[in-house]
Amino acid sequence: MAAPLPPNATIGIIGGGQLGRMLAMAAARLGYRTVILEPQADCPAAQVANSQIAAPYDDPDALAELAGCCDVVTYEFENVPVRAAETLAATVSVYPPPRALEVSQDRLVEKRFLNGIGVPTARFEAVDDQAGLESALQGFGGSGVLKTRRMGYDGKGQRVFRNAGPADWLGAFAAMGGAPLILEELIPFEREISVIAVRAANGALVSYTPAENVHRDGILHTSTVPARIAADVAEAARAHAGRVLAALDYVGVVGVEFFVVPGGGLIANEMAPRVHNSGHWTEAACTVSQFEHHIRAVAGLPLVPARMHAPCVMENLIGDDILRAPALAAEADVLVHLYGKAEARPGRKMGHFTRLLPDRD
Image (cartoon, rainbow, N blue to C red; front, side, top):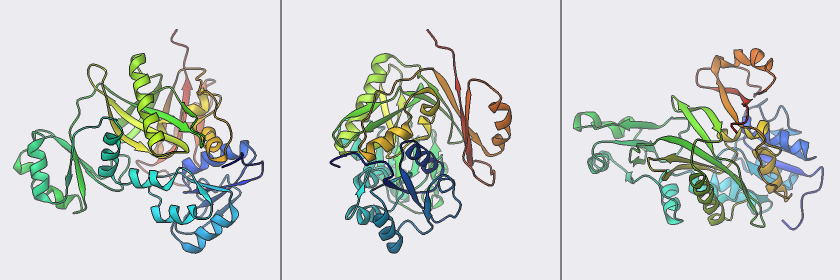
């Protein structure tokens, strides 16, 4: 991109969920128009965008329409069909690049990629059948996290084994659907953290203060910032995120999750080539949020230091937690963000809030 997109330029967003919604809101603040490609009508993103193309993500006519009306295209989730992104990239700039989707959509490919650029991960083994699963579990002492290589999020598509024996793993491959799997070593960690980082087309790189994350039932519950880690651990996490961005010639925001192990070592868990749930706190505690920084990057605008003006805790509102919203809105130091979803269901992210905290110093 030779020059920044001018005001009133159009940004296409593939995916109509809450991340697309917050990207569209950030784009509007910067004077850009947005078009959402999403098969579900009246999706959260379309409620705040200029228009929606209601069609499957890989529909040829819809892709042609999106390319024809947009100056640049981005996406809000990592399971966008790679071929669709490549088709778009032939006629319009697509950021992050389709290669990021290829890497992140397959956990085995992702782990090998991370190891190849010097980012440590848990030990892992590809599992293609029941015999392979039994061999891998024996190699890991009967413990590990079995995951589908593709799809699966918020704890879905996973099974944990702890000191398991033959009776425990019998039929486990078939129970996971018979799809290609990966077994990852079970890591004894002290805490989970994540780094939100952004890279511009010219190579400029900015990263946010690492967040400390707590999950419940496989879904992110809270992100507390700053994480309770030493300064050198925080810098190491940021450096690892920078390696990911550089290796992919990335443009936009990435989220990289880590386990912090005893002694301060870092083990990368996964990467997400998009804005990230553990970065929602940035809209309340930073001048420029992860959403605005992503739009800045894909539009060719300058990146700025990701300064945090207050420590904070972000908490997801899951299912009926949305009923807490009126009380939370009455608190002076709380920013509430609801996603416009019509139905609250168990396990469904309905919104989040960020509570600013007194400075620890």
